[in-house]
Image: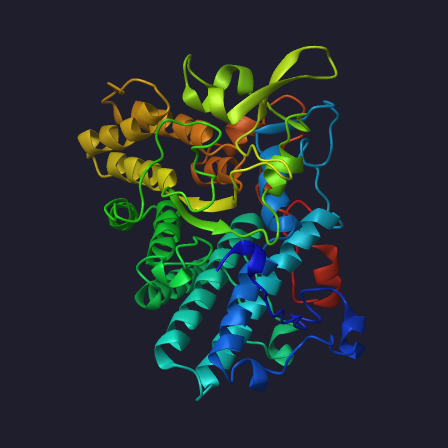
Amino acid sequence: MKNNSIKYIYIFSFFLLIGLTGCDDMLEAELPINELSSEVVYASDPTAEATINGIYQSMVTNTYYNSLHTILGQTSDELILKTQLSNVYTTNEMIDTDSSAGTMWTEFYKTIYNANNAIIGISGSKTLTPTKAKQWIAEAKFLRAYSYFYLTNLWGDVPLVLTTNIDETSLAPRNTQTEIYNQIILDLKEAATDLPADFSGYSAIRVRATKAAAHALLSRVYLYLGNWTEASDLATLVINDSSNYKIITGLTSTNSPFIADNKEAILQIPYSNVTYTYEGSALFSSSGTYMLRNGNTLFETGDARKTNWTGTTVAADGLTYTIPRKYKNSYTTTPVERSTILRLAELYLIRAEARVKLNDITGAQQDINVIRNRALLGNTTLTDSNQLLELIALERQRELFTENGHRWFDLKRTGKIDEVLSTTPGKIWASTDNLFPIPETARRSNPFLTQNLGYN
């Protein structure tokens, strides 16, 4: 099974037609010619599996390969345009009619709808192989949890949709973040039970969820919730699975965590029929559309991440700045890279933070040093808990920059966002900016969707 030979069946669902898409006229549209009825899709193993593959492939969208990197990079203190011109993201003046934010909302709910459709359809089928059906349901639950993780961390309280019934979803009110997190945890626990232990059933291609993916995301969830023991224990489960996962060492352009199917990758998103990623070919290209705000001072001398994961550019003011360049491949270059959404390094940093909170200083130092040593930096000698937490935050900033909004979420969950962004040049910061505005199109279609504070 190779990326350039995979053929997916897409289910272009009428997802959340009224309340969540803002497209009332879709109700009168004809079904796409390649849309299959649920009875046909979930009648056989090949078509059922193709729909699951299709959900993953549908994630290769502007939201997943662009907005999570660039919008959240700009709303935090991470990215600024090379032109040095301000926009609504760099100044944190987003409005509810912002099309990019609205697209993110819609894309996440599309994934959720398609996951719900798969869960319901596969559960109701009597002709599928039982063991395969359980795995596919588990994959759909993982993808639903993944989407809800981002929705609730971007918008706070959001509608919790577990059905495809339009009568129930079209006027769905907002559920509390606690309710959303409870569902995320439930989905991930149930998914972990039935997901495969390795990638052997996926032809060794790391583009579908395993138990480790569920454990990794659940570890992150518990970190965000301050459940330190659970966060540490789940990170340990993945870290100890050394036959499947291992930190990449000796970083080079051809030996990195972003190469397809490398052992640090826990889950990657496939790009069909190409040998490059959008991140490497356009988004963070060598010409440098975006610059790291603190790139010239962020890294210690000799840090291999700066050497291998950044470049330089001359900005509009004539000065030289650091640009993100984690992904190297452009168009036809090889080896192939993939957009990476879960990788092992994050688990070491999660466990390090949890261990500090649990007063396991030695264990925390060991985890921090795995990341620092890979970057060719020396071991930390810090023993003070507060200093270690500051170091972990810094290492997260160095290790995870421009990846899936980590910096934005870290500032929020650690309570540092007001302190940092109120003093970041060019920001017009208000504490209510920590949540995005509920899209105007969604609120116009669904009067039960209240707006977040600061946007009325």
